[in-house]
Image (cartoon, rainbow, N blue to C red; front, side):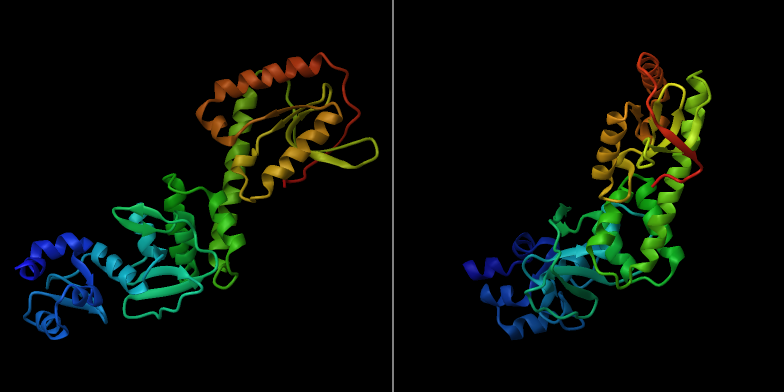
Length: 321
């Protein structure tokens, strides 16, 4: 009596999320291989999705069921990545891909089979669980997807959609590119570098507008600052040389280079030691709260005016690093 209840359809669906079951688990419950095979025949109530994986209905599998089947095939510690993971995260502009790309620890041996593309990796990220499925973080998923794509337009559309809709930050993409393999990385590198240039161009335009709103004297733009011996102290997006006020718009949290935070911190320390007053502004604040930026600039101007001007040399026209 107990065994018959276990084989009832609703009981099995409760045991196996999405109605996707390992054949071995069904056998462990007491079902024979021949009974499973009969149910998976053309007119039977079940369907075999791949060797060793059974769907407990006979319809067309959903994306969720295909993802679940790929995970069942890949085994413990597997997670979905690539295009399917990006879709689960909510990215819309994706290339058509019926496969499910999964990551597993490099110590395990599971082969790609059917629609399940299995990749072993030594850089296995901590998965996120979305709708019951373990999924790679979006930045990793996008870079994994891009590694297997051959059209720049597809890579650009996918990554741009994720970043513009604030599902992912370019900094995270840069980190994944630097950490992962260089094989297949050319196209996503092009896209991330395009974003870097675009972000900086937009930040400069916002800065010029806010600078006009501040009613302060016109500064020098894009200036190298050097000490009396010619050593580079840093690069300011705007500089008021008469009073020694520098404005740095490219904040660490907006740099695509993950080493940017330490570099910017050292730069600020050198400028401060040389007597330069630095106002540091995240580009997102330029866009979202320009009034606060104007207030910061005016306060910085007052501080700088109250101090002797520093012994700093300037050189114009060099792009910020």
